[in-house]
Image (cartoon, rainbow, N blue to C red):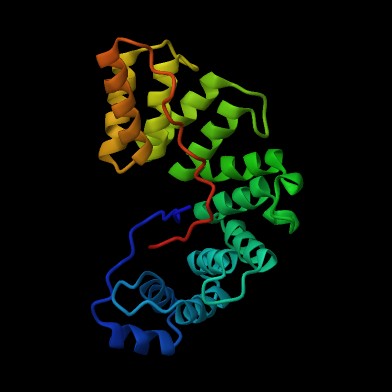
Length: 249
């Protein structure tokens, strides 16, 4: 699953100056240097070097760097894969109210990685929901989507389609293509809303325009069904936005 970023990375046009500032202990420069090496924007991609600079900034108390270092451990990029280390750094950033980290803690509980098992048997969906809500209340779109998904599928709470649609709308309003696709799906099938083919097409088009492969596929399915004058029953829902994500700012 692709990473979830809450902002696009800054370009590091003056890498040498950034390195000098980072070496002098400027934690923001250290964080930006980690971003440059992790993303390959402004520097040649080097995950080990990214992790090294993230750690310096994280040790200095930068919550974005703490979250990103957690993501590096979660994926085993530049450091040995370790759910325990990932959770440790996510929790440190979440303690500072960092929304991407709060969402990532939710992912760890939802996927069972918080328990060290990394399987559905070790998952705690109710605890995941609590962390998603913390991030969603800060208008963090991936967490808003995850709340919608949880209510749509009854994970961590009783199924509540109207509540699911409410959170999908919030996420869509904050730029989530996955949420736009889910709204299309809800309108196409009358789940939590009155069935409305035109509204479904509108949301699928928005999702497709914002890069959703599912949105593009669902538009094709609806067009094919219309040509055949048969109901469309095979549209695709998005997958949860639960993948642990880095914070680029």
